[in-house]
Image (cartoon, rainbow, N blue to C red; front, top):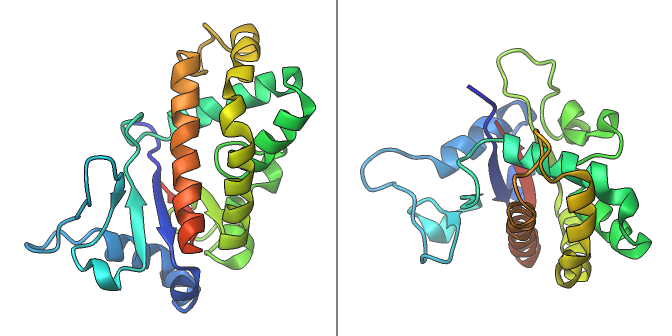
Amino acid sequence: MGLDLTVFMADWERLSAIPVENRIQALDDATWQPEPGNEYQRRGLADRWLWPSDRESAWCAEYDFFSTTGSYSPHARAGDAWADMRLLVDASVREAMDTFLAGLIWDADPADDPALTGGGGFFPPATDHGLPHVLLVCPPEAVAGKARAWERVESQLEELREPFAAECEGWAGRPDTFENFTTLLREWGDVTTEATRRRWGLVGLP
């Protein structure tokens, strides 16, 4: 069985008030409450955010990716695809895409991944036994920068088609099609846009 990815947007002030060692469990507890009457609530078919039933006091929500089955691998494959093709992309688009994807599904230098150190101490480090490895940590100010970058690149995604065909199409470990790749990017665009609207941050857990 492979690694899964669960992405939350969260009120950073509320999350910050929780002791560091309890924050991962708090996210799980706040969004997954299996008791009768506490099931997830979704506002409509177009809304992919899953909320606790007590929506008014909710301080976090989980995003339900429709283009994946919850697995982390499509995100990793998309990040690898961007790493393969980025040098073939116009510099202005490349810069915006780098800003948008860095820390979400791609890192220029994997050693700089903030999740490896718990996001600068915001979560326990990956070396803490008994705690899941945080896959991404993106505070509100960083999310806002990604949403701005997404605004710059959304209308230019078609420029990535030829670089994708040249470097990624048909290769194992890469998205099956260009459409699969851009669909997932658009979902991340929706995620960062909504979190920015609320001035919340993002957390990815296995």
